[in-house]
Image 1 (cartoon, rainbow, N blue to C red):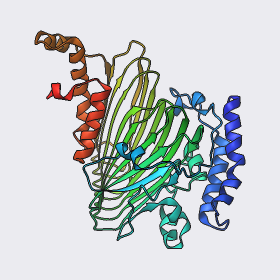
Image 2 (image 1 turned 180 degrees about the vertical axis):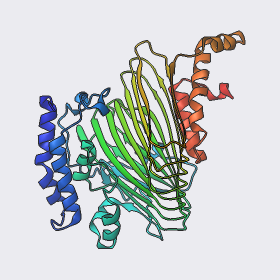
Image 3 (image 1 turned 90 degrees about the horizontal axis):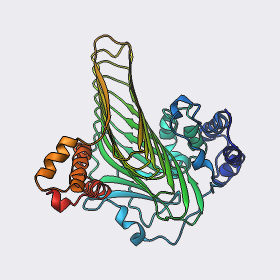
Image 4 (image 1 turned 135 degrees about the horizontal axis):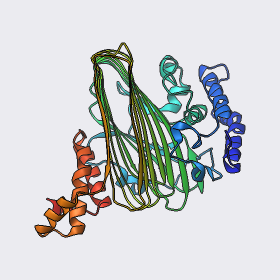
Length: 448
């Protein structure tokens, strides 16, 4: 596939830096991790960066994002303290915290634990013998080898969150994963890798955020998360994306579920130059429930691209998917949601809905809901709406003394707020509610 000069230069830089990366990471050349990384960098070298000629990237160009000389070996920054990052934490709850500064774990700002739970970092999991069996069984087993950016992350995977919850455990506190870039590097590429394993009958809540602390530096985050939910396990995963205009995020999350498990991923996209979310669920048993909820509110020239997949492979399973978007100015949204129901997956109940409001004359949304059904005893539906605010509702509110500007804001707020119905962490719900109100210029006191 033809790449422009800047993309070729970055690709060549990454490929040529791979050996130096492994040497710096002190990788055992006889280890399975070395073999996985080597295969991944070879795949990336063959595949290159995705372009708009790829069907899955038809509406999203990475050209402006790749037009930078990124630093790919981040160094620990020593000039960040709690006051610089505190406002990005979710307060009002007891939580474990894993904090990464420019891609490097910061133990001072973190609150990890090994007390019956492994809530720690990937560098430990990838290097310590006691984790070898876990890593061999799970690492890179559901991340897709046909996705070049997932391969790139795998090749350079070193740091991120490692969460291993043993069976019959309800984690007493939420887990916050916070990734900060400081601006120390003018142009920085970070590639966090998260591995989450939820044992039988266990339950965990996870909140993830990527945040650029500088308005001037350029950051590209290429993140991969693998989540394994065992029998009767429950995981609630929340992604808060509200970054600066110089920050871009490519987030790939893969979820494998066993019998009777419930996995929910909630994605809130409010900021960043370009945000691409790849979210894929794979069913490995019966009576599984998958929940996918998303909300995007963007303006300017921002772009949010949500690509989802739910693969039903067994009978008697459910998936519920609702994505909403509000697009202002010259912003662009993309929604591509695919639900695959295999022949064996009888009695499947799959719901998918994508609703969008365009409030900018130059804003656009490209939506492509898809159902591929090979079973005959199923209950599946999908739908998509793209429109503007209801003029009759605006008129009704104005007749009752509400200004047109406030009426618009309140209607959008009500439209967006449905996405919070399934947020089970009250303090997080309040924080996201405040972000929504600020984005839409809603006075919460007035609303109440």
